[in-house]
Image (cartoon, rainbow, N blue to C red; front, side, top):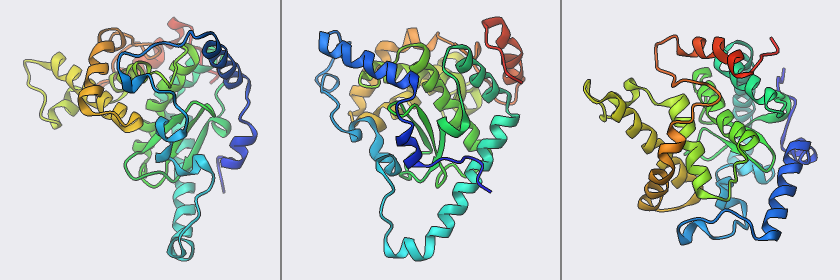
Length: 282
């Protein structure tokens, strides 16, 4: 039984939802007035004219259902359908049971961006190099069912991409601006992924430099994400991450704290959400 009654064709039909339409109109008006945010390097001043520059070449179903090969059609189509159903089940369980996902949904709803899992989450087949993404044009989170196979992985992807959705909704994020991309990737890595344990695994931590190790973890993840979606070089990505790092690293909204592994931080953040005006519908 399909949990998320949603596919790419339905996405396109609902493309002009209120929030996305308002942001698109505002962006077009700013371009006409010549008020776009300027970037610091030649690679960031180029106009984005196709989806591949936004990283959408990693999500083939965003461009319509890709034509399967003969082998895929007759041998792997059933596996694809099964993976999609499992992904949707994981999404449902995360939305129902995970306090961090509850917090992010409450933050979006309280910020004037109503969140509906049937409209704003889609399980799709993606490039093997990614586990998920946020499509600002359609205001939708993509979960890659061919790479995010476990519920824990889906939870991490959902929380990460919901930070991007929050930034797009609340902070007027412009995905054509590489500094904005770097900032939201810093925030997502900072709030969701990096911890002393993960930094230790990467060989970047010691008991005497915990804070420095955490910052290094955030910078490395943000740099890799910028390189993946904008096709820039490692020095270019590192430069833009360093430029916006101090401001974006210290912005903990809407979670309010950095989540450490094997701690009570997620539950504490959820209980503190009403203090910031984020009220859950539960």
